[in-house]
Amino acid sequence: MDYYVLSQIVNGLIFGFIYALIALGLTVVFSIMRVVNFSHGEFYMLGGYALYALTAGVVTVFGIPLSIPTILGLPLAMVGVAVFGMLVERGLLRPVYTARMDRPEEYAIILTFGLSLFLQYGALTAVGPYEMTPGAFWEGSKHVIGDLYLAGDRLFAAGISAVLIGATLYFIYGTWTGRALMATAQNRVGSTIVGINTVRMNITAMVLAGLLAGGAGALLAPVFLVYPDVGQIPVIKAFVIIVLGGMGSIPGAVVAALILGLVESLGSVYVSVAYRDVFAFLVLIGVLLFRPHGLFGQQERRA
Amino acid sequence: MTRFQRAAIGLALAGGLVIPFLLDSYMIRVAAMALYYIILASSWNLLLGYAGQLSFAHAAFAGIGAYTSGLLSYHYGVHPGFGIFIGGAAAAGIGWCLGRMCLRTRGPYLALMTLGFSESVRLILQIEHDFTRGSLGLQIPYLFGEGLPNHLLGYLVMLALAIITIGVLYLLVNSEKGLYLKAIREDEDVASAMGIELVKWKVNAFVISSLFAGLAGAIYAHLFVQVLAPQNLLLIEMGLILAMTIVGGLGTLTGPIIGAVLLVVMWEIMRDVSPYAHMLLFATMVIIAMKFFRSGIFGLIASRLKAKGLISKAPPFTVE
Image (cartoon, rainbow over all chains, first blue to last red):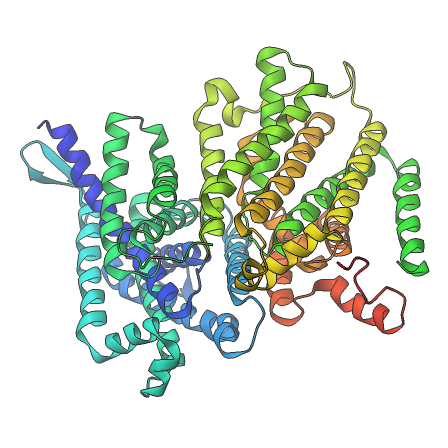
């Protein structure tokens, strides 16, 4: 196999890990709250801006420019976005499952879409349409194998993504809080009866989504820069991934993310590089035509 | 219909006819833009407000209409007078395919699919720049022959299309078919049990709304937009349509009209402030409206008017 194809496969897997990071939060929120968060892409954007603000020395606190190392900026950015996610849950999404409401799904989608526009145009108004570059995590290009070299930042992003995905899976499958999360996803009323605080589970899901999306945004900020609509394309891919994996399925999201990463990379080798971002939509059409409930999803009732 | 409602419709029609003669050329363009958004918001409202289906592809359908007609005249010399109808038909046809695919399943698939669809349409128009001229912009001819566009004439054409759109929507939502759609919106299981073919009527609503979007997009493009670019299809356009419908009042015919006019006026006022501030304000308005008054501005007014007996309480059509 020649190194070009090999490098594209490695690249595809790297992207797969990062897509998985974005899609995991989306699918956890969907499984717990039955809400598709259309502002998830802006969580990703906020992660990038948070990293930039913390590390680039453009923000001053008490006259001292804020410029901490990027490696420390990453967890801080993640926590910042997680707190934001918590506020969104408390302020905007809580009525979806506490109040008696007509068509809560419609409410949630329109509200989060409005929030997405609000954050995008808020960023445009506040900092303008300029692309910003936080410092690198791991500078230079690294020798991997044979003739294969990869940018250090991409390897770092993929590595940290894999660690974060592992930690998330451990949290969900290995801890009691995780079991309570899964129980809430399966049956809200039932889990309330056995003593699970479902409101706290919603907060947990949104915090998890904020941590993961903010982390993805911060990890990719040195590679793809940060600008107000940076989250638009990644979030659409995350939508495709959760549909392909099965809405609300956690292993489905990880597997589907790796599949999409590979499809895009190999598609840009064998079909067309320019169409790279369109493949996701073709995958979406394929899923809806042949397997509407996704790879790991439960069979949806047909309308 | 009460006397008050007839008077309000008459006043709106008279105002729509007389006002452009009092405005300068720039303001006529703004008024025509308001009409364009009235058509888009009203037809989108048929989907969400009446059938309960949330689509993010409405702006993309307007773009498909405009690009179909524009490309036909640019490459093959098709007269825009035919082109606009082909544009509308193309939007309806693609709407049918998309609707058949994602309206079979329940859940948020339509919203996800249409969002992916509209971004893909924009990307493809950008990538295929040899054919579509991509971001350079596609120059398209004026609808009525050579020479400078006559904005007053253009306004009147848009007004006619708006009246046709709202007329068709009025007849539709007050017919038995309209009741099917409302039943689907309220409860799909019950609607299905009553013998309503869910997929068929959802797809029908989707096709009708796409048809009007495509027609409006094509006609507006040939009358007022001289250069088409994929940037016009960004999700901000969808955000505008959504904001107008939600703020004006979902599920009523009057709501989107009020919303479109109000937001276009606010947009004009804010044009001098900042190029992005209007969208920030509209997004805030959407969030506030969804959280505190989901029936929109017209919903607030309508309850007062109903209490005074000025607008009819019962739906004008009931099935025997």
